[in-house]
Image (cartoon, rainbow, N blue to C red; front, side, top):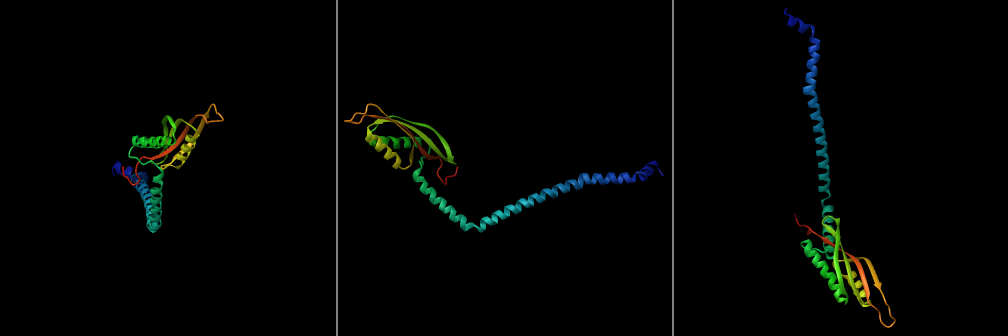
Length: 192
């Protein structure tokens, strides 16, 4: 026999172990990893199936909740400014405040937007600072007007400064107040 065949017979156990390791490394391990991935994928698909089945089974409940939410949204829109863009919203809100102050007989010194914070997706709360002068009727009518207007204008701070009060006549008040208005920057149901 040749020396090669003699070495093969002598080291055949080592060759069998080597072949087994090669098969395990390049066939069995990747196959096992693929099988684990398939099990995870199957588990995820099963969970998705269960969720979809639950949604289908609860279609009536979900439809009822959607209708309630839609009705609540329609009611809420009466209390929120819903202009197309921010500039038009600011003009509308400022005009509403100016109208209230003018009807109350106040002298407007300044109306300015201070900034906004997002309170919900597409809903922002804007703060306005108001400075105006007037008598006691102006103060009372402005308070009533701000509290009763729609869309809602909420009074956050209210500071009144008065000098020189006389018994015969009420003097002039200087009023600084901060109010909040809400703005929905995308119409409900609109797609972007």
